[in-house]
Length: 119
Image (cartoon, rainbow, N blue to C red; front, side):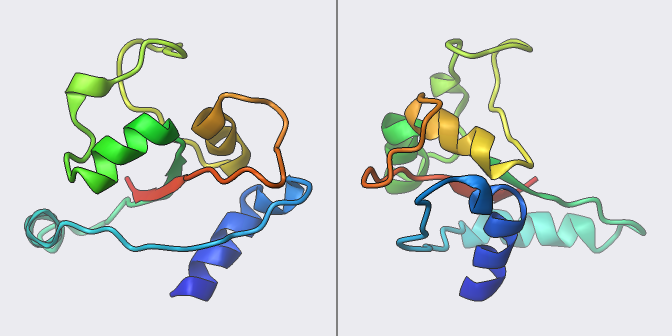
């Protein structure tokens, strides 16, 4: 699966970022939530699931992944909320990369975390 994720990231903008390289891919899945989700999908005739990127920044990453809170509404950002409070996802990796650090220029030696989410 590592190669599939890497190919997806590169196809949707990663290859456009000078000096960009993937340092690590970590799968983070809450099995109970996924199992419940999967069972609701099997009753549907068409599945509309997309892989979208989310750049939560360091604090958001800690809450979503490390603390295991997921996309908790308590820490939705209003900083860049063009459409109101919420969690924003992008098909273009470069946009998530921007929000992961809040800078328009990629710094080659700086590590940022971007989530690839099933939406």
